[in-house]
Amino acid sequence: MTQDQIKQLEKELWDAADALRANSKLTAAEYKDPVLGLVLLRFAQNKYEEAKPIVEAKIPEGPRGKRVATKEDYLAAGAILLPDEAKYEYLADLPEHKDIAEAINHAMKQIEAEYPDLQGNLPKNYQEFESDLLRDLIRVFNKDAVKKATGDVFGRIYEYFLMKFSMQGAGAQEGGEFFTPPSLVQLIVNFIEPDHGIIHDPACGSGGMFVQTGYFVKSHTNREVNEAITCYGTEQKTNNTKLAKINLAIHGIEGKILEANSFYSDPHNLVGKCDFVMANPPFNVNKVDKGRDFVKTDPRLPFGLPKADNANYMWMQYFYSYLNETGRAGFVMASSATDAGHSEKLIRQQLIETGAVDCIVSVGNNFFYTRSLPCHLWFYDKGKRAENKDKILMIDARNVYRKVTTTINDFDEQQMQGLTAIVKMYRGEAPEVSKENEWFKARFPQGIYQDIDGLCKVVTIDEVRENDWSLTPGRYVGVELEWDEDFDYQARLLEIQSELNVLNAEAIELGATISDNLRKLISHV
Image (tube, helix red, strand yellow):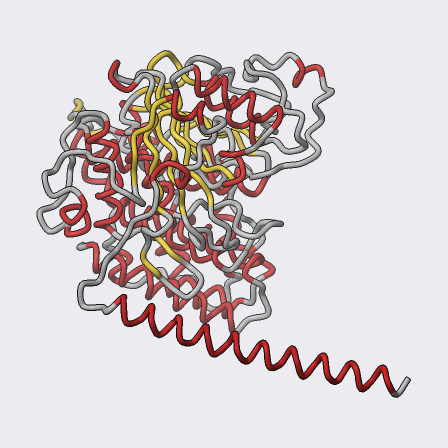
């Protein structure tokens, strides 16, 4: 199935499912988890059918023929041995007089019993749905194109549904907080290249960082995902934890996701052990109890507790502390953090002086689905090459975006390749860009790194010190000047001067009129 066909299938399935919701009494939040559960059921059936001939071929012939395939045989093939009543085709063919909601609830319980990582995480509240709505939904995910979809395609469909629900603000108090936009996740993964070892996200939401890492491993190595990486996630909210576990199961990624508050616990005990850390933590969190013994003695805070009543500089120290001696981190952070003062500036100074701060990227408005504020992407690299030890790459990408809708932006493929190429060149590596990438060729015609006004600049730690330890890229890269040779700037300036003279004359006349009127008013008092 081509990328265009996958995109078309995603859209068709979403449009059909969303139309059914629009004609029901359910809100998007009420609808989200049960619909994602049906996607999982359909995926489990497809994965089972995909694995069946592989599993059977691997079972050796015995004296009495081949033994019956076991649950362990299917798990080894990345699939679930589905009981008959948990198969999607069983639900799709269920007679009209049978209770469809009860049948789906039963199927979910059976899958949880077979797949321990999903125990207690699948929706089992289908009795709240009207029977006709459930049957229509089951038909949506039972089309021929869906039946033939492979595991990777279903992963894409699941992520697409997560994104669309996030755009509706479904399932989170702040709206959409469980989902980091794909453009930002992909840029983080492209920059830090997490192709091996321990991957950690201490604010993992629905697990999107792990999913994109899985795609990266598949496309850049010859290893199986679960052989190359080990994923550890922490998530505070119960529903998000469930989403993450389902998301990893959908994508065939083994991982340990725990429900815990990262401010008051370190459940995986990974300080100094991580090859890669990725996160989109909640910004500007207030009221963290800094008086707790755990917080006061937390080894993840080597540069001290920030006095400001937000947790941004706690997160930034966590990410640094989790890394091993060659580890890399990439994370999303509030734009205010790059110039924060007082105790936060002192922490930022210490972070910079370690030499681990590798790159800062300014991102413009409207990349998030439920808030329009800009943000920054921060990158650490404890294993920098010697030439870059005292340097930081600044990228101002606020003017780099594709407008998806009036309220949503992202990076298109050429922009994504181009931004990634900047980092590769800065590291002394060959950029990986297509021959058709005009965005890249227009800025780097020689295919080698160079500072570009308004876009990127490599700065030294001394320069950052001179700028009061600011890490705001716009402060360093300058402004890109675009000169239109077909535009008569001199004539336009003369026009502006003429317009200004007229406005000044009118202002003088208006002032005289107001003054005269005030005199007349005073004389009558």
